[in-house]
Amino acid sequence: GPPCPTERLVLQVPARALLEGDTVTLRCRGRKNLQVTQVWFYHEEKDLRGPLQGSELSLSPLQQRHGGRYRCEGLVGSRRVKSNSVTVTVHGEHPHTHTPI
Image 1: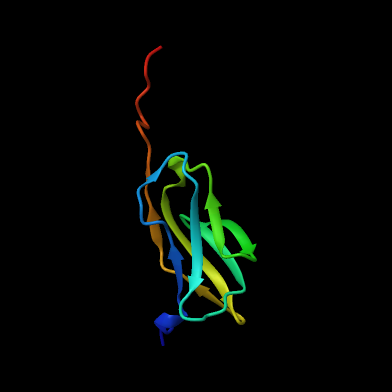
Image 2 (image 1 turned 45 degrees about the vertical axis):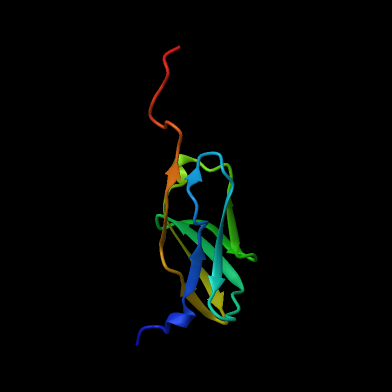
């Protein structure tokens, strides 16, 4: 059957507006006391980085191209468990306007 929801990981993204130039930390957490030993991060299904011993991925300085869907996977015991997918929106000040010199 489908995995128990408590076995899913949670990808945590700051709940504020994210601006270009910010430092943003994504956290991959197990629910309850699930021990996650290694973590992989994905951006738009591309493997970003991993396995990491820590559960955090820092995006700094934040750029428009960092926007999109993220998810993480982690090793819980010998099983690889997936998180939900989270959409990150990056707000630029005026991303497409160019001031003539």
